[in-house]
Length: 321
Image 1 (cartoon, rainbow, N blue to C red):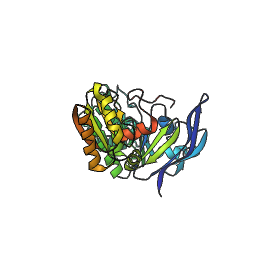
Image 2 (cartoon, helix red, strand yellow):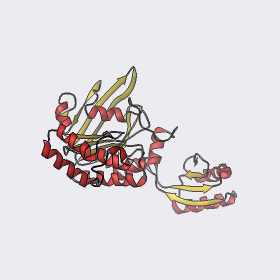
Image 3 (cartoon, helix red, strand yellow):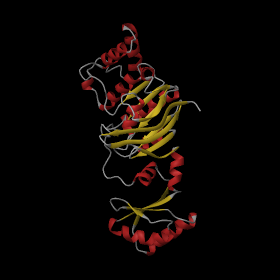
């Protein structure tokens, strides 16, 4: 297997606290690996080690065929990195940002201008090229940041929560641009708090928690670990306990009430007969059902199954995670 990224037993400790504890995985060339995990799980620490910004205390890793510790310069020549926050200068224009960074990467004056023009066209920023980046929208800044990561046409691209804070339209635009890179042969490692994003983009997933890999596989493989289709019914919050009691005898496990109490989910047995039995049981218990549907497990189900229910909304991982 041609691996563009390979991590073996990576370990890292900060002030006596373990951030990574034997993290191992591989990413095939020309594919997308999605790295999922709760805040503080070790996602950003992993990215920093693989991009040579941080050294692991133990283990080894290679990126684009080069050892991240012994051949850091060669690794940097072959990668692009877009972090959690757009690393562009607000006082410069979009074109000036790209030209400056291209010159730093030894493109030469004419070459830097040409490369900047190519990227501005590719990322639909031509009309904003002469405007200060401080006037850009969040989506435009993210596109520019991704463009800067691609100046040297890297073979491996690291995206650390690239769409955090973007509106849905900007997020879809960035997804399309990531797909274009993969289609051209670029390997992508993507960390994200948005499970739909991982489902849309990733060929393989790695779930980390407390610095360890706790699951890996394709999105469909991980979904199958949670189980088959589940019944989801919408009820009045004050009737959720009644719905659970009605469904419990025909469910394979304990029915689950949503956080706000307006939905009850249960995995049934018996196929269509199980669905019919559920409808009859709810009717017999006097539960008012506003919606009744079967649905496949989502990555949200996988995530909560593996790491437990969320304690807070999505937020950026800390600087030492």
